[in-house]
Length: 196
Image (tube, rainbow, N blue to C red; front, side, top):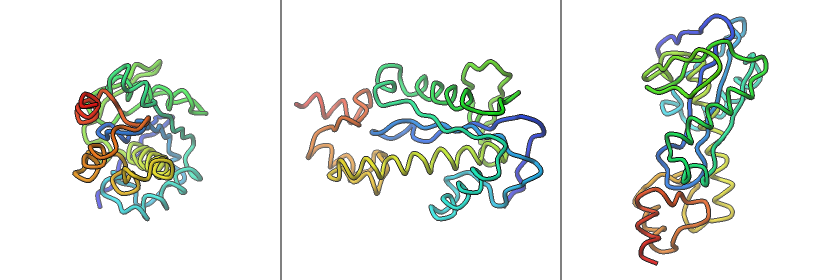
């Protein structure tokens, strides 16, 4: 596994989970790691098993200098669009950090508007330890939220696909229509609503 860069100083890594799904919120996390308390095994959350992600999420919460997870709701996604809702969730995550970050490194090619300098890092979750940590927190929190939604709306199978547009999810949408946690601005959901 590659050695990830740990930035010096109060630099937060930012990442999100849930831009692509048809249901549920988009979740962002901001993490300032403590160079004196390194966390072994950090990587892009998509490259880790669920068990490994869950274990690392606990270590991040225990060892980071600061971390915050925030979200933008389905209503905000439909009102603003997914890109702007993602940026809003990132802004909320950074605002919740204590101590405050002095600089931000953001996974991807766009940065939210922040009151600190921010730099976009393409594939940052595989390069920068704090972005990898943020990806793990965002993914584990979002997955836990989708499991909770599955308890309320079991007919959609959120516990298996986490809201992503799998064949099974699209079939469930066709069979049951959209739930209150579906994103009505997303194509497959909008098409299903237009058939009503």
